[in-house]
Amino acid sequence: MRIRTWLVIPMLASVFIASLVGAAPFSGGAFHVLRRFTLGGSGSWDYVALDTSGQRLFIARQNRVMVVDPGTGKLLGEITGLARAHGVAFSYADGKGYATSGDDSTVTMFDLKTLRVLGRTIAAPDADAVLFDSVTHRVFTFNGDSHSSSVLDAGTGKKVGTVKLDGAPEFGVSDGAGKLYVNLEDSGAIEEIDAKSLTVTRHWSIAPCTKPTGLALDREHHRLFSGCRNKLMAISDATGGKLLKTVPIDGGVDANAFDATTQNAFSSNGAGTLTVVHELSPDSFVVVQTVSTMAGARTMALDTRTHRIYTVSAKMGAAPSKSEPANPERRPAVLPGTFALLELGQ
Image (cartoon, rainbow, N blue to C red; front, top):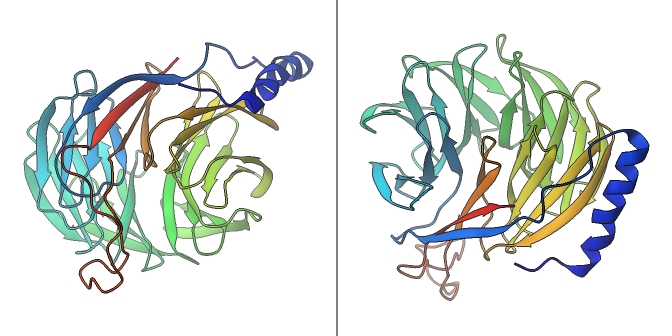
Protein backbone atom coordinates (compact mmCIF):
# COMPACT_ATOMS: atom_id res chain seq x y z
CA MET A 1 0.00 0.00 0.00
CA ARG A 2 1.30 3.47 -0.89
CA ILE A 3 -0.06 6.72 0.52
CA ARG A 4 0.37 9.64 -1.83
CA THR A 5 2.72 12.17 -0.32
CA TRP A 6 0.41 15.11 -0.92
CA LEU A 7 -2.09 13.53 1.47
CA VAL A 8 0.20 13.90 4.48
CA ILE A 9 -0.72 17.58 4.86
CA PRO A 10 -4.50 16.96 5.00
CA MET A 11 -3.95 14.13 7.51
CA LEU A 12 -2.00 16.43 9.84
CA ALA A 13 -4.40 19.28 9.21
CA SER A 14 -7.30 17.12 10.31
CA VAL A 15 -5.81 16.83 13.80
CA PHE A 16 -5.35 20.59 14.04
CA ILE A 17 -8.79 21.49 12.67
CA ALA A 18 -10.47 18.93 14.90
CA SER A 19 -8.96 20.53 17.97
CA LEU A 20 -10.55 23.82 16.93
CA VAL A 21 -14.03 22.50 16.25
CA GLY A 22 -14.15 19.94 19.06
CA ALA A 23 -14.50 16.92 16.75
CA ALA A 24 -12.51 13.70 16.92
CA PRO A 25 -9.56 13.73 14.48
CA PHE A 26 -8.95 10.96 11.97
CA SER A 27 -7.27 8.09 13.81
CA GLY A 28 -6.68 4.37 13.74
CA GLY A 29 -3.87 4.25 11.20
CA ALA A 30 -3.80 4.09 7.44
CA PHE A 31 -6.16 1.93 5.43
CA HIS A 32 -4.51 -0.75 3.32
CA VAL A 33 -5.30 -4.05 1.62
CA LEU A 34 -5.35 -6.71 4.31
CA ARG A 35 -6.22 -9.75 2.24
CA ARG A 36 -6.94 -10.70 -1.34
CA PHE A 37 -8.92 -13.73 -2.50
CA THR A 38 -9.13 -14.96 -6.07
CA LEU A 39 -12.78 -15.80 -6.78
CA GLY A 40 -12.47 -16.52 -10.51
CA GLY A 41 -15.45 -17.11 -12.76
CA SER A 42 -16.58 -15.31 -15.89
CA GLY A 43 -18.60 -12.16 -16.46
CA SER A 44 -18.66 -8.52 -15.45
CA TRP A 45 -19.75 -7.31 -12.02
CA ASP A 46 -21.63 -4.50 -10.30
CA TYR A 47 -22.71 -3.83 -6.70
CA VAL A 48 -21.36 -5.62 -3.63
CA ALA A 49 -23.73 -6.00 -0.65
CA LEU A 50 -22.94 -7.26 2.84
CA ASP A 51 -25.46 -9.48 4.61
CA THR A 52 -24.86 -8.25 8.16
CA SER A 53 -26.92 -11.08 9.66
CA GLY A 54 -25.19 -13.99 7.95
CA GLN A 55 -21.85 -12.23 7.39
CA ARG A 56 -21.86 -13.02 3.67
CA LEU A 57 -21.02 -10.92 0.64
CA PHE A 58 -23.46 -10.84 -2.26
CA ILE A 59 -21.71 -9.87 -5.51
CA ALA A 60 -23.76 -9.09 -8.63
CA ARG A 61 -22.06 -10.94 -11.48
CA GLN A 62 -23.71 -10.43 -14.87
CA ASN A 63 -26.08 -13.45 -14.99
CA ARG A 64 -26.02 -14.38 -11.29
CA VAL A 65 -25.22 -13.26 -7.76
CA MET A 66 -22.21 -14.85 -6.11
CA VAL A 67 -22.47 -15.43 -2.34
CA VAL A 68 -19.06 -15.42 -0.69
CA ASP A 69 -17.64 -15.86 2.81
CA PRO A 70 -15.61 -12.64 3.31
CA GLY A 71 -13.36 -14.33 5.84
CA THR A 72 -12.15 -17.10 3.54
CA GLY A 73 -13.14 -16.06 0.02
CA LYS A 74 -15.06 -19.33 -0.30
CA LEU A 75 -18.00 -19.41 -2.69
CA LEU A 76 -21.05 -20.43 -0.63
CA GLY A 77 -23.62 -20.46 -3.43
CA GLU A 78 -25.12 -18.55 -6.34
CA ILE A 79 -28.46 -17.05 -7.27
CA THR A 80 -28.90 -17.68 -10.96
CA GLY A 81 -31.21 -16.61 -13.77
CA LEU A 82 -30.38 -12.88 -13.81
CA ALA A 83 -29.77 -10.71 -16.87
CA ARG A 84 -27.19 -7.94 -16.25
CA ALA A 85 -27.27 -8.24 -12.46
CA HIS A 86 -26.98 -4.97 -10.55
CA GLY A 87 -27.98 -4.57 -6.89
CA VAL A 88 -28.96 -6.67 -3.87
CA ALA A 89 -31.03 -5.70 -0.80
CA PHE A 90 -32.19 -7.62 2.29
CA SER A 91 -35.24 -7.81 4.55
CA TYR A 92 -34.06 -9.76 7.58
CA ALA A 93 -37.49 -9.85 9.22
CA ASP A 94 -38.82 -11.69 6.16
CA GLY A 95 -35.70 -13.77 5.63
CA LYS A 96 -35.61 -12.61 2.02
CA GLY A 97 -33.28 -10.90 -0.41
CA TYR A 98 -33.93 -9.04 -3.66
CA ALA A 99 -31.67 -8.77 -6.72
CA THR A 100 -32.20 -6.52 -9.73
CA SER A 101 -31.64 -7.29 -13.41
CA GLY A 102 -31.19 -4.45 -15.87
CA ASP A 103 -31.78 -6.31 -19.14
CA ASP A 104 -35.04 -8.06 -18.25
CA SER A 105 -36.37 -5.37 -15.85
CA THR A 106 -36.92 -7.82 -13.02
CA VAL A 107 -36.45 -8.16 -9.28
CA THR A 108 -35.57 -11.68 -8.17
CA MET A 109 -36.74 -12.51 -4.63
CA PHE A 110 -34.79 -15.27 -2.86
CA ASP A 111 -34.62 -17.06 0.48
CA LEU A 112 -31.74 -15.67 2.55
CA LYS A 113 -30.90 -19.02 4.14
CA THR A 114 -31.15 -21.38 1.19
CA LEU A 115 -30.64 -18.86 -1.66
CA ARG A 116 -33.59 -20.49 -3.41
CA VAL A 117 -35.40 -18.23 -5.86
CA LEU A 118 -38.91 -17.50 -4.57
CA GLY A 119 -40.23 -15.40 -7.42
CA ARG A 120 -39.56 -12.71 -10.00
CA THR A 121 -41.38 -9.39 -10.42
CA ILE A 122 -41.23 -6.98 -13.33
CA ALA A 123 -39.99 -3.58 -12.13
CA ALA A 124 -39.08 -1.31 -15.08
CA PRO A 125 -36.44 -1.14 -17.83
CA ASP A 126 -32.89 -0.70 -16.53
CA ALA A 127 -33.69 -1.76 -12.95
CA ASP A 128 -30.40 -0.98 -11.22
CA ALA A 129 -29.78 -0.01 -7.59
CA VAL A 130 -32.15 -1.37 -4.93
CA LEU A 131 -32.78 -0.74 -1.23
CA PHE A 132 -35.03 -1.98 1.57
CA ASP A 133 -36.85 0.65 3.65
CA SER A 134 -37.65 -0.59 7.15
CA VAL A 135 -40.21 2.15 7.89
CA THR A 136 -42.59 1.21 5.07
CA HIS A 137 -41.44 -2.43 4.73
CA ARG A 138 -40.97 -1.84 1.01
CA VAL A 139 -38.27 -2.51 -1.57
CA PHE A 140 -37.35 0.32 -3.94
CA THR A 141 -35.53 -0.19 -7.23
CA PHE A 142 -34.00 2.72 -9.12
CA ASN A 143 -34.52 2.38 -12.85
CA GLY A 144 -32.08 4.51 -14.84
CA ASP A 145 -33.54 4.53 -18.34
CA SER A 146 -37.10 4.63 -16.99
CA HIS A 147 -36.54 7.68 -14.75
CA SER A 148 -38.46 5.95 -11.99
CA SER A 149 -38.39 3.90 -8.81
CA SER A 150 -40.43 0.69 -8.68
CA VAL A 151 -41.87 -0.15 -5.27
CA LEU A 152 -42.41 -3.72 -4.04
CA ASP A 153 -43.95 -5.13 -0.90
CA ALA A 154 -41.04 -6.77 0.90
CA GLY A 155 -43.10 -9.66 2.18
CA THR A 156 -44.74 -10.74 -1.07
CA GLY A 157 -42.37 -9.29 -3.64
CA LYS A 158 -45.34 -7.84 -5.52
CA LYS A 159 -45.17 -4.41 -7.12
CA VAL A 160 -47.28 -1.87 -5.23
CA GLY A 161 -46.36 1.42 -6.87
CA THR A 162 -44.04 3.60 -8.93
CA VAL A 163 -42.32 6.88 -8.15
CA LYS A 164 -41.72 9.12 -11.16
CA LEU A 165 -38.37 10.89 -10.97
CA ASP A 166 -37.04 13.96 -12.75
CA GLY A 167 -34.03 12.21 -14.22
CA ALA A 168 -32.06 8.98 -14.42
CA PRO A 169 -31.56 7.58 -10.91
CA GLU A 170 -28.42 5.90 -9.70
CA PHE A 171 -27.85 4.83 -6.09
CA GLY A 172 -30.33 5.59 -3.30
CA VAL A 173 -30.34 5.52 0.53
CA SER A 174 -32.96 5.48 3.29
CA ASP A 175 -32.75 7.75 6.34
CA GLY A 176 -34.62 5.22 8.48
CA ALA A 177 -37.35 7.77 9.18
CA GLY A 178 -39.46 7.55 6.04
CA LYS A 179 -37.35 9.55 3.58
CA LEU A 180 -35.28 8.24 0.68
CA TYR A 181 -32.60 10.07 -1.27
CA VAL A 182 -31.38 9.26 -4.76
CA ASN A 183 -28.74 10.65 -7.11
CA LEU A 184 -29.92 11.73 -10.57
CA GLU A 185 -27.00 10.90 -12.81
CA ASP A 186 -28.04 12.81 -15.92
CA SER A 187 -28.78 16.12 -14.19
CA GLY A 188 -26.31 16.26 -11.29
CA ALA A 189 -29.01 16.48 -8.65
CA ILE A 190 -30.55 14.72 -5.64
CA GLU A 191 -34.23 13.99 -5.10
CA GLU A 192 -35.94 13.29 -1.80
CA ILE A 193 -38.77 10.72 -1.81
CA ASP A 194 -41.49 10.23 0.78
CA ALA A 195 -41.41 6.45 1.12
CA LYS A 196 -45.01 6.24 2.32
CA SER A 197 -46.80 8.51 -0.15
CA LEU A 198 -44.41 7.60 -3.01
CA THR A 199 -43.95 11.22 -4.02
CA VAL A 200 -40.89 13.37 -4.70
CA THR A 201 -40.79 16.02 -1.98
CA ARG A 202 -37.60 17.92 -2.83
CA HIS A 203 -35.02 18.33 -5.59
CA TRP A 204 -31.70 20.16 -5.50
CA SER A 205 -28.64 20.57 -7.68
CA ILE A 206 -25.24 19.38 -6.49
CA ALA A 207 -23.31 21.21 -9.22
CA PRO A 208 -20.40 21.29 -9.93
CA CYS A 209 -20.82 17.54 -9.45
CA THR A 210 -21.59 15.73 -12.71
CA LYS A 211 -22.90 12.18 -13.19
CA PRO A 212 -23.32 11.28 -9.49
CA THR A 213 -23.36 7.52 -8.91
CA GLY A 214 -22.61 6.19 -5.41
CA LEU A 215 -24.46 7.66 -2.43
CA ALA A 216 -24.02 7.34 1.33
CA LEU A 217 -25.71 8.95 4.34
CA ASP A 218 -24.64 10.13 7.78
CA ARG A 219 -28.03 9.63 9.46
CA GLU A 220 -27.13 11.44 12.68
CA HIS A 221 -26.04 14.66 11.00
CA HIS A 222 -28.19 14.32 7.86
CA ARG A 223 -25.25 14.53 5.46
CA LEU A 224 -25.29 12.93 2.01
CA PHE A 225 -22.12 11.90 0.19
CA SER A 226 -22.45 11.65 -3.61
CA GLY A 227 -19.66 10.18 -5.73
CA CYS A 228 -19.32 12.20 -8.95
CA ARG A 229 -17.72 11.05 -12.17
CA ASN A 230 -15.85 14.37 -12.52
CA LYS A 231 -13.65 13.31 -9.59
CA LEU A 232 -15.56 14.99 -6.79
CA MET A 233 -17.44 13.91 -3.70
CA ALA A 234 -20.41 16.25 -3.26
CA ILE A 235 -21.57 16.61 0.35
CA SER A 236 -25.16 17.79 0.90
CA ASP A 237 -27.30 18.85 3.84
CA ALA A 238 -30.30 16.51 3.56
CA THR A 239 -32.35 18.63 5.98
CA GLY A 240 -31.79 21.90 4.16
CA GLY A 241 -31.70 20.34 0.70
CA LYS A 242 -28.51 22.03 -0.43
CA LEU A 243 -24.91 21.35 -1.38
CA LEU A 244 -22.38 22.11 1.37
CA LYS A 245 -19.01 21.23 -0.08
CA THR A 246 -17.09 19.17 -2.62
CA VAL A 247 -13.79 17.37 -2.02
CA PRO A 248 -11.54 15.67 -4.61
CA ILE A 249 -11.64 11.93 -5.27
CA ASP A 250 -10.19 9.71 -8.01
CA GLY A 251 -11.83 8.73 -11.28
CA GLY A 252 -14.46 6.09 -12.00
CA VAL A 253 -16.37 6.17 -8.69
CA ASP A 254 -19.42 3.90 -8.49
CA ALA A 255 -20.04 3.44 -4.76
CA ASN A 256 -19.88 5.44 -1.53
CA ALA A 257 -20.14 4.42 2.12
CA PHE A 258 -20.20 6.09 5.53
CA ASP A 259 -19.03 4.71 8.88
CA ALA A 260 -20.91 6.42 11.70
CA THR A 261 -18.47 5.21 14.36
CA THR A 262 -15.32 6.57 12.74
CA GLN A 263 -17.04 9.45 10.87
CA ASN A 264 -15.29 8.38 7.68
CA ALA A 265 -16.85 8.52 4.22
CA PHE A 266 -15.46 6.42 1.39
CA SER A 267 -15.55 6.36 -2.39
CA SER A 268 -14.41 3.32 -4.37
CA ASN A 269 -12.88 4.43 -7.64
CA GLY A 270 -12.48 2.44 -10.83
CA ALA A 271 -9.11 4.15 -11.30
CA GLY A 272 -7.86 1.69 -8.68
CA THR A 273 -8.13 3.66 -5.45
CA LEU A 274 -10.27 4.14 -2.35
CA THR A 275 -10.70 7.74 -1.15
CA VAL A 276 -11.14 8.26 2.61
CA VAL A 277 -12.87 11.50 3.70
CA HIS A 278 -13.09 12.33 7.40
CA GLU A 279 -16.02 14.29 8.82
CA LEU A 280 -14.45 16.66 11.33
CA SER A 281 -17.83 18.20 12.05
CA PRO A 282 -21.17 18.27 10.19
CA ASP A 283 -19.82 21.20 8.16
CA SER A 284 -16.13 20.33 7.86
CA PHE A 285 -14.64 17.52 5.77
CA VAL A 286 -11.12 16.62 4.70
CA VAL A 287 -9.56 13.98 2.45
CA VAL A 288 -7.21 11.99 4.68
CA GLN A 289 -6.09 9.14 2.45
CA THR A 290 -6.08 7.68 -1.04
CA VAL A 291 -5.53 3.92 -0.91
CA SER A 292 -4.29 1.82 -3.82
CA THR A 293 -6.69 -1.04 -4.56
CA MET A 294 -7.03 -2.55 -8.06
CA ALA A 295 -7.96 -1.04 -11.40
CA GLY A 296 -11.71 -1.48 -11.93
CA ALA A 297 -12.53 -1.79 -8.20
CA ARG A 298 -15.38 0.70 -8.44
CA THR A 299 -17.97 -0.84 -6.06
CA MET A 300 -17.71 -1.84 -2.42
CA ALA A 301 -19.42 -2.89 0.80
CA LEU A 302 -18.61 -1.57 4.28
CA ASP A 303 -18.85 -3.70 7.42
CA THR A 304 -19.62 -1.13 10.12
CA ARG A 305 -19.00 -3.74 12.82
CA THR A 306 -15.37 -4.44 11.87
CA HIS A 307 -14.81 -1.23 9.85
CA ARG A 308 -13.53 -3.37 6.98
CA ILE A 309 -14.23 -2.58 3.33
CA TYR A 310 -14.70 -5.13 0.56
CA THR A 311 -14.23 -4.40 -3.12
CA VAL A 312 -13.87 -6.53 -6.24
CA SER A 313 -12.24 -6.35 -9.65
CA ALA A 314 -10.51 -8.38 -12.34
CA LYS A 315 -7.84 -8.03 -14.95
CA MET A 316 -9.26 -7.06 -18.31
CA GLY A 317 -8.38 -7.96 -21.87
CA ALA A 318 -8.18 -5.62 -24.83
CA ALA A 319 -11.25 -3.55 -25.75
CA PRO A 320 -13.30 -5.14 -28.57
CA SER A 321 -13.37 -3.54 -31.98
CA LYS A 322 -16.08 -1.09 -32.99
CA SER A 323 -17.38 -3.65 -35.45
CA GLU A 324 -18.33 -6.15 -32.74
CA PRO A 325 -22.15 -5.95 -32.57
CA ALA A 326 -22.49 -8.11 -29.46
CA ASN A 327 -20.66 -5.56 -27.33
CA PRO A 328 -21.98 -2.08 -28.21
CA GLU A 329 -20.38 -0.50 -25.12
CA ARG A 330 -16.99 -1.93 -26.15
CA ARG A 331 -16.25 -3.26 -22.70
CA PRO A 332 -13.14 -5.44 -22.53
CA ALA A 333 -13.59 -9.05 -21.49
CA VAL A 334 -12.64 -10.28 -18.01
CA LEU A 335 -9.51 -12.40 -18.18
CA PRO A 336 -10.35 -15.92 -16.93
CA GLY A 337 -9.48 -16.68 -13.32
CA THR A 338 -8.58 -13.10 -12.35
CA PHE A 339 -11.75 -11.91 -10.58
CA ALA A 340 -10.71 -11.07 -7.01
CA LEU A 341 -12.05 -9.87 -3.66
CA LEU A 342 -10.01 -7.34 -1.68
CA GLU A 343 -10.45 -6.70 2.04
CA LEU A 344 -9.26 -3.32 3.34
CA GLY A 345 -8.83 -2.11 6.89
CA GLN A 346 -6.51 -0.28 9.25
